[in-house]
Length: 130
Image 1: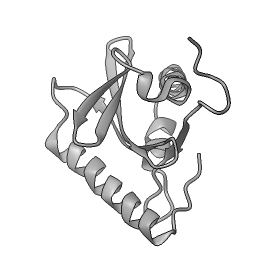
Image 2: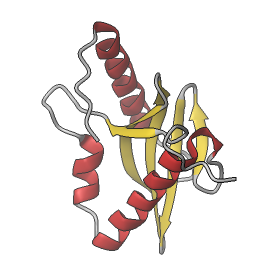
Image 3: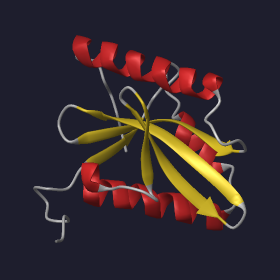
Image 4: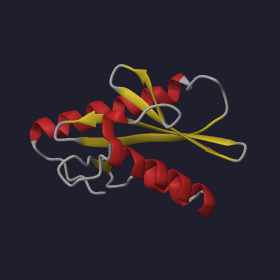
């Protein structure tokens, strides 16, 4: 079953902070080209398959927060995201995973950004870009 038709495709946006920066994009830009390519491919899978995407590519973390799971060689990356209204995913935070659990500080950052995004959405002032 292919989920790539235009009406079924999900939109993936990067969270934009109050300074106008995109933390996940900034993080990705600092990675080696091969690693960025693998992360971009996994983001594309999320866009194509949406909530049907499962392990090993994504996993529920807690509450509304999910993680994209990307392995490149011996490195494990995670991109934390949530599903927003309108078939959209918002990429909130990213990290180079070094422990079995996501550190509470990283999870806290993702949750804070999600709340910030939702508050802006309620005010109608979300200038999200891909």
